[in-house]
Length: 365
Image (cartoon, rainbow, N blue to C red; front, side, top):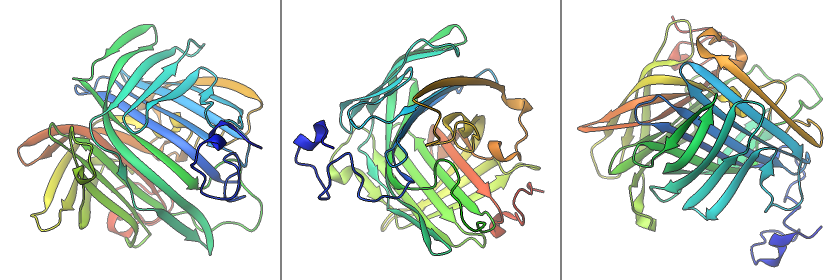
């Protein structure tokens, strides 16, 4: 089946663009965005994903304000045309590749509306490829880019319209594609004892942005790790620095698997190590973007067109309930004499010896 992109010289396999190079049901292609004021009184996030081998496209937009989180989400039969990036009320538009993107949320029944433009503050960072096998099966094989930016436009939540000023509303985005577990569970023998440890921290400072991520197994061995320094306002190949080593120290809040405070460390080539102190001020539920959402998970078939929504009071949610484990915490950041703001994303399931976790869902002491 030919589509519009087939007229461009960008093919990587002998197949048309509409046909992924693999028949794996879990192949996906996805946008993610977050944004927040420097004061921390507004946090929003959005995502749009296509799962061509499941014939599903879905999207969500969610806002945290005043201790509550609003969600609007949508799903549809995936179009063959990859240029078509609208799901229900939610649209992602690439205005200028790797520099400017527009996010729109049309009127809907769930109290959210937006017209927001993301303008890059840095060049995009290509992270090392994520490859992970469980019992010999490849369950993750993906590429991801991360980019820092600022937002302009407006969003409306619960009847209140909030202006987005790029001087005060920052954020980050990622684009990832490849294979990871999505959609309805597959059949076969029972899976292994669940374990996943993931930290991701994109942090803004005035002149430089810091990027950090790590995956570790139950004893703390790393199967993926990366760190970068990105110059603000620079977009050439030399504007992204890849560091030689990354470290983390998390002080877990008692009875949870969430950070009470954290320190991340990066060691640039031939330079002294950098230490970034993080102080969480807002907690955002990734469930609002479909993670661990039993009814609206990524790539789940909801019919040819469906729209839904939720509102949660965050203080009422059990932090050890599986749907609430995956969070992003908006954090104030300090690096030497610099002060900044950014996100610490956390997903910790199962044992992790360095953290003192020994079972699937035990909380910190």
